Length: 148
Image 1 (cartoon, rainbow, N blue to C red):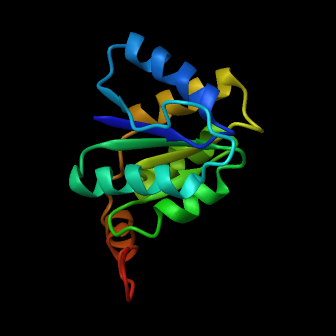
Image 2: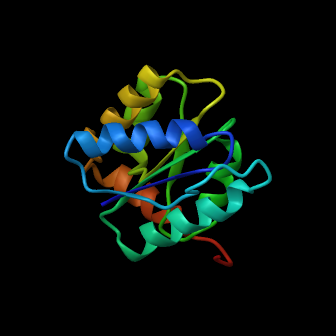
């Protein structure tokens, strides 16, 4: 399952990407928003996706906002969520291989539709490394004092 969500700045891109991914035959769920609200907060949809990923460990998430920064920060407050953002394909690949990233946060303001589609495809097809050093480091990401 892939969960996709956005705030007002990513709303239109999310809708376009949802249709594109659905047409690719992917199992995707739109978690909102379902109508444009210029006053919404990125936090709400990031929390929804993060909780979904925490419940379904094999699931993936895609979040879209203006810069992608707020989404990354919010999603990473949840144990088991490893959210990344990137401006090129190499960073996506490393995020999946080395960090087993399970949420991809995209910038509606700085990425083209073509880049977003390319990044999502790479995010969904790149496997995590099975090297012990990367697994060890990924496990350590959840060593925090308190969780959301």
